[in-house]
Image 1 (cartoon, rainbow, N blue to C red):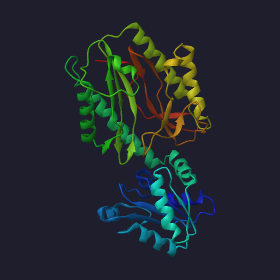
Image 2: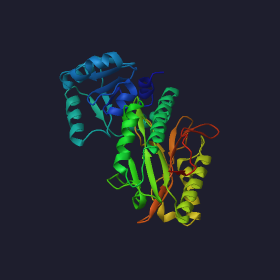
Image 3: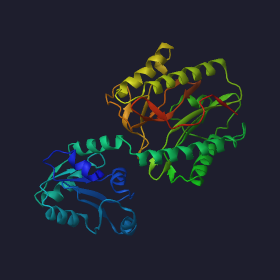
Length: 359
């Protein structure tokens, strides 16, 4: 069954068509990425990729499982298709639209006596579909992770304490990833060292990497639209007993989280396995973020491995397990892997050692 057919079958029977607007969701259904365009699917599964002049030729060569339609005035094109398919009610993706944009669609379809539904049903249906990765999607994420790991190993050999800066490492990582086949990077890299490692989302700056401190590398690449996400700590020289102790606690918390992952387990229970261990060690107040998240066409997507997410894990979901302990003004530690949920457990897609790397 095509993805477009699966989508409409998951929607209420009163919905005659669905309009997908966001870049990532259009890519999911059409296999074509563009910053402007729409994906329209009918109740019978007929699908259209609506493109303006800038993307039309490329779309003709790349779009899969839908008819490419050139529009010069999207209002006219949507009216024509609504009339052709006798649409009475259309679901519109809500999360990507401003209130002003939504009102434009409501006014547009109102002229054709079409009722717009933007209650989140379509958004939820797409999110649920995207949670479960196909074999091809998993292969792309594995390829993305391989690029990340190759680039990580390359950059380690380039770090010179007292000379190399955080920002230089971040730039070198992006350069190497693109050379190794990435189309882009998953996010702005978190490359921080020393006391800055206590900030979970610290930004790389001109601080030089010094001896006897931690270096955090939270990085990821994009391959054919799919992301990877990995965090490793690097010991630059010799660390203190406290730093080594915290690293060991975070590592053991992460291993417990990974061990708890399998189909049928609630996302919040994976978080609980990690959080309880850190709490037992006396550091619960220093672990303030969720244990992980889904990864795919977005680097952060459903499910959320958090205290409140009741999603039941299913085979084919790809999630991160990334506990951390952050001691303000001192240092922080985070270790992150990506895993694929399976019936009996999970498969770890991250191959870089978690034995503390020293340079």
